[in-house]
Length: 334
Image (cartoon, rainbow, N blue to C red; front, side):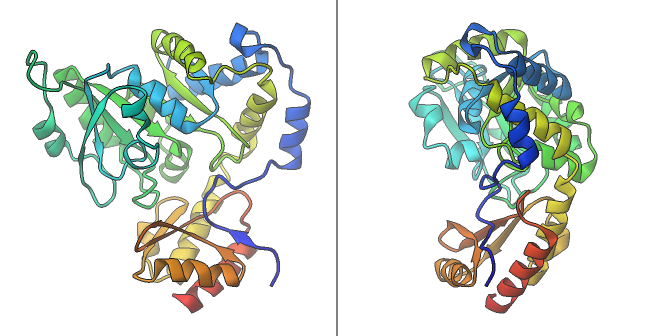
């Protein structure tokens, strides 16, 4: 059968030997004291890439999103987002449980911004009667919609409206790197449309752990306090930040390979490859759980993300040969 091909997520990658070497050689210090030079270098670099003042290295994307959203939304206020957004579906209610915020949603089949819906839902400050909208959150790429890219012009329209309405904009950019490579849009152009963002190193870029919250110097300073309050203060964490720096140097442009492999899998599964913009393929099947089980028996791991939805994600550890072998298995089963 050969080695198992794991398409459940792009979080399953393992550090390359070159990345391990970079980690072993990292210069470190105590990051809670702000003395880890490798962390500082990573934060400065990512902030610069997105065109913002500062960034904060955090253990997870969920923590990055919680810190970013709470910088814009006070307890008792609300954030608007698409109904299948990661902050709504996959962060275990953290924004309500920890941040005390409420959430309302619009629906879009590709996870896109529906500005008409946002306008209709927006609740300005009307005194002690209604929950006030203080943030709109956008996910780019959109995970559960199949790795779709929210176009830059849609983000610009949202930014223009938000400025007029006095509302902040949060970007869940866990896979923003994929959007950047797929479209050629500079990361700073995406960053310019939002007040705060989170970006992940441990998905397509292949680092073992880590995300960054990006925003103004004041927002990041406050988030640093909240990171510690939530138990996210880290000490000699430059060994992990070094993995992120290595990934940015060596694993960014190769995301195009993952996108090509995803289109190959899509075609095998009867999904129009033209609709697969990045590295995620979503297949609707009434027998989703059975398909996952059958694929696993043939050495291909895929996952359900709903009762009738199968997801497969290409990544650093899936070669062209792996993608072709998985496609052959899936074509036979689907």
